[in-house]
Image (cartoon, rainbow, N blue to C red; front, side, top):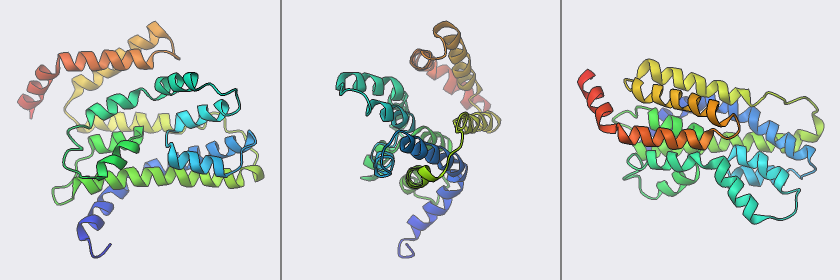
Length: 237
């Protein structure tokens, strides 16, 4: 990498952002590997699924789908429901991924919640290639998940413990990221809009069905009031 200092510089800039993700992905990945092992799957299943699918929530769901009768239509709609939020992530990243070359194909594949949060909000230094920065954030997060799943898959049969509540690690992480953006950013209106509409949809649609209505409502409101919000930010800058 020394022959390519701009790549080394991008790696050094990206790595610190992914350290908190390492802790979350490692524990969740291990839990996923142990979960697959408890269902009777060989370690190669969680390893390949974490490497090729890289959609944590869907991988947990897919574990049960693999034990049921083959139903591709049900699997398709269930996947769309679980990962529909990635459509909005992709739309939000269209401008940021311009000019990154062929790396965009991997960036699209690896656009998980955590990589989106970092790549969207991180202030990439001017002397760092943003394409390589995005690439290493995505690659490192992907690697953490694969490493955790591999450990859990291989050693799952040797360890027996209750993993209930372990998913709270990622919830806590998102709360921290949200608070940090509120403290460092200037777009309070968009953050509070998202919080308010999510709460309203949670009350109306319930805890299991509020995600997609909330995302649609947020997208509609932010699209409708985009220009006034941007002008307000420019005035206060």
